[in-house]
Amino acid sequence: MDRVTVTEASQVAEARRRAVAAAQSIGFDETAAGRVALVATELATNIVKYGVPGEILVGTYEDGTGSGVEILALDKGPGVSDLGSALRDGHSTGGSPGEGLGAVRRLSDAFDIASRPGGGTAVMARLSSVRPAASQALPAFGAVTVPLKGETANGDAYAVRERADGWTAIVADGLGHGPEAAKASEEALRLFHRNQDRPPATILAAIHAGLSHTRGGAVSVARYERDRETVALAGIGNVLGAVVSGTATKRTVSLAGTAGHAARRIQEFEYPMRQDDLFVLCSDGIATGWSLDAFPGIARAHPALVAGLIYRDFARVRDDATVLVVRDAAA
Image (cartoon, rainbow, N blue to C red; front, side, top):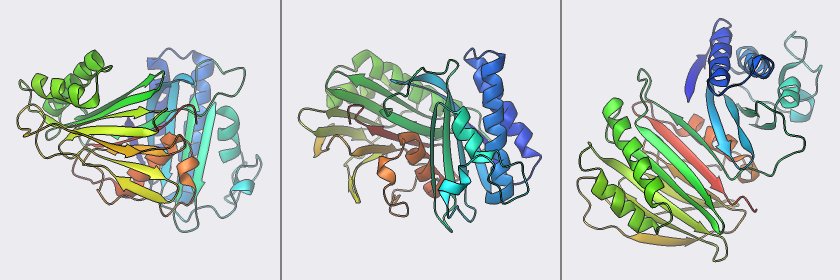
């Protein structure tokens, strides 16, 4: 994802430019790209007026609901005490025309927001090139993945593949950062796709064997089975997972080592997971003590918004950072 720091008005144009570039890269026409530009402008302007410091993340998405451009606006400002009023067109406390968040929600194909007084605001907007005729089901997953500041290559990578009985997911974190780390994580994803129908431990063993010509990294593979209400995880290194069930968070086990170079054993661990629970996988660019406790009820939010909040509050500044959040699409 592209990241734009927003601390003053001149950065609004950069956020708009990055968003339009993302839209054009996946074939948006002028009208659809113009809608993306408006949303990016409103979200960045909103941060300047109410939420400095903040940042805009821009990327693309593809899941069961479709594909398009995703924009996350994350700030650590004073927060919003009355979201209902803030989302009405015409509402403004900063001397603007009052289009703001109301316009963003109206222009977006998927929209979600979380805010609390003193805790900042997070907004997620997804826009497709062709607006759907009817609302879509809640998507199964969302993610934030950004390179270390100053790097253009992201050493982290992720993928999710839906199955008839659930899903399979991977997060790979190439050792270190930069282009060589990116090569390792990209190779891990290639091997994941080749072996995705096999059990997680078997997939991970294939990745471990196939990364020997790279610098290696940390890799975790998870498989959710709907009928059994379980998720199994096999991991090497510090890509760590958790099942979020209401207010409870159950951390998963990943064994020590470096995929491609050193792994004393590869083993699956199984955990209960209901259909409405969340599964979260984070690279070590996210602090291991992350928590959603500051936002009660957020586990029912759009998975991309949940990923954005974890990234905003717990990202480490010295590494690539990835948060993948998966929910059963049938929930």
